[in-house]
Amino acid sequence: MKYDKVPTGKQREDFVDNGGAFCPHCGSSDIFNRGTLSKDPYIYEIGCYDCGGRWIELLTVTGLMLEGEKPIVLAERALKDV
Image (cartoon, rainbow, N blue to C red; front, top):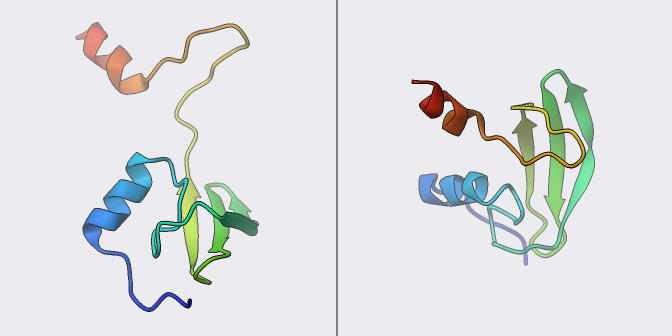
């Protein structure tokens, strides 16, 4: 099956909220990294085996966690500092 429509705003929101773990066109988790296009910012070309969909993922570094540390979400830390 070939994808035939652009993901809606809701589909894009779900994609981001779920960490990009599925195809935003068909919902399949059978996706692959087609290659790194840039490292500043991190830009990856991703594809879907099931529907043939292709998209670009834009990633940013939001923090640092050392081995054995509990992850810190910057938004939560900012709220505690207020």
